[in-house]
Image (cartoon, rainbow, N blue to C red; front, side, top):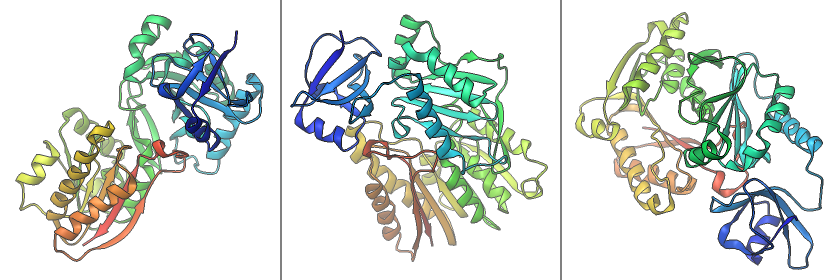
Length: 397
């Protein structure tokens, strides 16, 4: 018996406008209990087909929309077309100099709760809902056929790992297809070599979403002393060094991250600009270090912290923290310096974040100009409000 759902008028309106989620409190009625991953059909007030999607009884997002509008057959040909569309959108974006990027960006490419990243010849399939598990073999087979992967690695959001292990005997970091992996994958980004820990690293192994901002930093770094706060494995730093930076200081609380940054620099020692650039590591909390080392000055400062608002209740505190962080960064800028402030907090809007950075700049009583603001990279499209998380502001002083 098909799982049938009826939803509130407000939710119907959202679906018609393209929103891909139905929350549990928007469901008025369903004809029976739903099973994880089965197809749920939404009917509108006139008892006409509205949408179809994956049912997830364990998530507040109860239904993730696959298709809305007129009824259609969601079969092998439908899945193939949807994958082809995502691949075609990326085709003009990258050449042989960049072998690390996102093939599928979840709901924004019509694959709700599923992300597919490429690292050279290894693909990482990350799931944010267990609703995909009943179709895992089918989807993996399709990806293998179309993208000719040497290896496919499964990554799981923390909130579903226990369920997936118990019900489907699958683990985070499990290799679904291909040979074992005993060391990080080396991939290219704009000709630079980076390592990615695809089995255990953050997200899928590397922060691919900051590529365009890394390129911009590289184009503005020549002759500058650079502080990369929250440096992780030194992505911004490596671009700055290639762009002719005089020196790099990587600041991160994680020794593991700093060691990764060191290895990334070693991978690129054959590039003269990188070989000449002086690199220093500081293992410390970035907030504390910026406050306690007031005499240090830099020509370019990158502030790229982890999310400061992981839930809506943390939004106000995060906005205040972004202002404080930007103020601390500005205090360390040389005359003529450049501040690059980033946010990956989805619960803080672009307007709120940019205003927080501008507020800090105004409070500094220094003359400044807003050079540009940026959002998502083209392989990380954001097609609905909740998907908009990444933003960066470039300010010159």
